[in-house]
Image: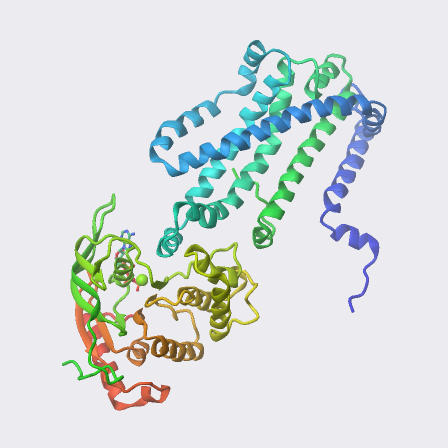
Amino acid sequence: MPVPRPWPRRLVESEAARPLILIVVIFVLWDMVIRLFRIPPYLIPTPLSVAGMLVTEWPRLLREGLITGYATLGGFALSILLGIPIAMLIAYSRLVESYVYPLLVFSQSIPKIAIAPLFVVWFGFGIFPKVISAFLLGFFPVVVATVMGFKSMEPEMIDLARSMRASRWQMFMKFSLPQALPSIFSGLKVSATLAVVGAVVGEFVGSNSGIGYLLQIANGNFDLPLMFAALFVLSMMGVLLFGVVELAEKLMIPWHQSRRGDAVGLAV
Amino acid sequence: MAESATGGAGVAAPAALIRVRGVAKTYRAAEGDVQSLLPLDFDIRQGEFLSVVGPSGCGKSTLLKLIAGLLPVSHGVIDIAGQQVDGPAPGIGIVFQNHVLLAWRTVLQNVMLQIEVRKLPRESGLEHARKLIDMVGLNGFENKFPWQLSGGMQQRASICRALVHDPAILLMDEPFGALDAMTREKMNLELQRIWAAARKTVLLITHSIPESIFLSDRVLVMTERPGAIAAIYDVALPRPRTLAMMGSPEFARLAQTIRGHFYSQGTLDH
Ligand SMILES: Nc1ncnc2c1ncn2[C@@H]1O[C@H](COP(=O)(O)OP(=O)(O)OP(=O)(O)O)[C@@H](O)[C@H]1O
Ligand SMILES: [Mg+2]
């Protein structure tokens, strides 16, 4: 019979609680630093004022958060829907690879924030430019990881499939795809967090709604507590989306989770 | 210098099932060509058990892949039952040197992959798979993933996969390399039993000279790279063979002869 451990020990040992514990520690340190060095609130707000803002401004934060959330989801979904098929074309065709891949890398080096105003000119103030912006940031990691996933098939595995006289479809469904999934998922996780950034970038340059817009206003008014509260909401959104992807990964490739142990799939 | 033999089963020597005629292989690579096999000529008869021994890198795996239709020949012709090989033929089971089990499938699922991909009846396939898993001593591990097994266990799982569709031809690339001596002997006996019961035609690549003699009708010895045939020996020992025969003078003499090839070449592999 295992001896029941005291609850503080159990809390520290539970993986879910660890980030929360760290957050609490950071909050305490943050508060102490402000008190110790007498940092004025117009430079760094106190944790308490930020928490207060989170409570009082919650309806507004939620409303703007949802708007940014939709744009993020839209961009992320587009990244998946376009990124994975394009990556598959690149992985399977030398020709497509030689034409498309260098161009993709080239386009990736263009700072998105510089061209984001253009989207507003083209698509107006709606959700669309934000979705595009989120897509542009989220797209590349998906492509890179998927290409890597499909290309990393061992030659002997191909021999095995061929020896069984697998059709192209079987080859894809029973060998290539399952083999590529862990890599695809690590790309999706990076993409999820970048899509949030992309959506906010879209909102920065031309929008009258969303967390990015709220950040602009708070910045203009030197309303630091509101700014920090908005940043907090933004981070939570990234965490949430990351968590959803991780959950999907657990459900779709349970064999992988247990094998990789501690190495979190934060490649790229 | 070859020992006289009639294969042991007492039947007249059947016709060649696999014919290798002037087959050579040169790998083309950007860094330059690698000549792997010099032109080879030999037959594998219907129902025969043929082993190939040779130093590392002499082209044994290459030869197996050529016969399996997984690699194109550079010169010459291979035919199986009169059909020229130009791709993987049906009715072949292969044990690969690196066992290549799929990480996302359990042992049983890995074995069943063969049945699924070939679209064979599931029920009988499953029954056969379980029987094979039992035979190689993996019972209780059916639902474990490959990375939860030892190297030797992975190898045994891949042997089950090569046998589950009951192929007429079995091509095995060092299938017992990762096994301990005891398990290896047990697997040798099982392989002999399967071969005798189902009259399969077997090509076995091995690093173990005793294993090659114990199991085979003939042993093909290869030279160093680029591989050529150094000699082919008939094994005259009666069948079914027992482990005790490994101590017989005949066995020792043949083993010594084969070993001589490697010493004279200055290499002893394994
Ligand atoms: N895909 C390849 N491309 C180029 N050269 C290759 C390739 N595969 C094998 N070779 C070369 O062909 C030769 C024979 O290789 P092979 O794998 O057939 O040897 P082997 O007899 O099976 O060796 P071992 O006993 O170590 O498994 C080697 O010298 C190797 O370098
Ligand atoms: Mg080899």
